[in-house]
Length: 439
Image (cartoon, rainbow, N blue to C red; front, side, top):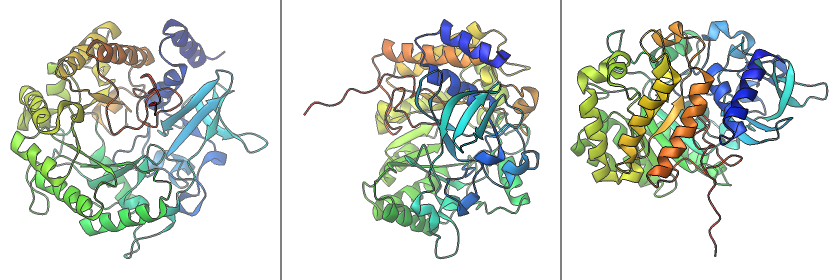
């Protein structure tokens, strides 16, 4: 039995209340997975939905380092089921790492499986190419480039500004590769639109709406880099908000509208609401004051941690606490050289942040940190945070929600192991499944 297998099984035994599916999912998200050529897609010409690189790279290597996976993209996500651990259906965002002990490969009969330390541990499902990806906009652009879908088709991810105005070592968040991801796609000659035209977005959504006959797409997220000045003559609230306004006017009530933006003053937040946005994600990134200042220097310089938190609380007056869902990047708390070196201390710090927001009725969510190698924290921490931290965070997250009587946040699909579709962390997999509503 290999060492990673032993680690995973030890954690499953020590934390039996955390779904075993979440243990594997967190390990894949923090450390990545390798793909045999038999498991790669044929890009937009095949039968498998390819990885869209919708905002960050979420890879453990640059495109030139990924080998064939850079030419034939891996699938956007994978589904784990069955195997010796009896895994329930688990949707996992793909983060490529050619040196990972996890590998997706086909057996002699062509059936895809996930292998750990050389042993098959689950069956693997891949997302079928959606019909709407087979159609192009009138200008020839692909729907995948303008309006990719993730979370097994649940969420349309509209990165309408592909770079960030926090730029350079003194401003960029130290774990974020949004600007590098833009550069590497342009260098590779891939289409990667910097500022998406609102009419292109509407045309892509029309194609999705026409061909998504099962109405699998339920929400859209408007997001992109921080705007400290203007883009196309608009400040941040107006820039992201005017897409929402156009979408809601063209497709009233078709999707749940969400926006990921900075923590803005209350008047700006009201503009989001007036434009038709339903859910606001003013991400606070990391709780600890010292780490926020070190890891988010642009946000500290332009807004400041205390003001950021005040604005998050104020935004609940506009959207209602349940519809304010700030993200944090789970794992950077333990990043060298400045992070916590003890899992107990890291969990205590993160839980302090959870209790701060949840005591006000605001339910944060989190993305499992992927240490992208072009970022300062990724370079210094290629292994990411310890798997034990991620498993204990799931335990602390659910306990804090229970303490304050909160339930799974809206706009993320169904909760519960075997049901969840949120793919970039296991927080939804680790919450209790919703009971069917009696008629």
